[in-house]
Image (cartoon, rainbow, N blue to C red; front, side, top):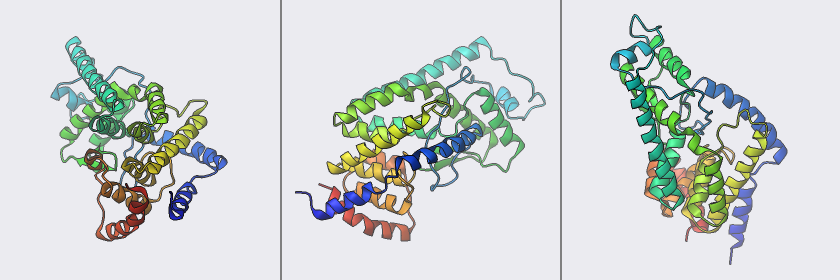
Length: 323
């Protein structure tokens, strides 16, 4: 028997859904803003930032592995910095082998995640989100490296996890190598997050797969900025991600709490942005037994005041949505 309090809470949760017309108008603005954002290869600046991935299809071959001297030329640390670098056959063969390794590694993780591995699902979600803001092609990579070489005050950091964390670098050379490696990984694997994966997650989620529902909610559509049906694509994602999450909640699955919390904190982008409520859901997810590997991936840190308030708010969530 579902308690009246549960029905009231579920009704309150569903009221965060916005009318379709408002969503469509908002998304049109959203797409334009994200198009400008990703052409600038920006990275979210704080934990409160939205951490979704908006990738574009690669237009060029992946960046080749260069020697330290050639890397220095790319970032403007050589008198020959403006000379065009032409990769040797050895460089290209090495680059192709590395790209294949990255692709096979992620393909295997996706396959095992679809088969139910939470550990591999965490790797898939992390790859998706740490590619946020990665250069779209070699030209974008060169511009990013050159911008940092010309402006030492720019922050030298690489995204880590899915919640706005970063790895900081003190050395331009170290950061340049790390950013180039990130570009290669993302360039080699970005089309693995296409419609085939989304269709399989959708099918498994509709058949009751709790993990597939969670992964679907955490992987917003990619490469749709210029798609003629982009609004419909996003509406389908938002509707289904929300439905999958509430289905998991109804079944007292901790992954439902985790997805709702992340959505409210701006990851997944299928709910409004309500950070304090999101924190309460995340704490409840941990208290109700959400997989530790996913909690580690989130890596959220609370202030003392926020934690006390969110812990108190999580009490009612735990009572209603935990086994």
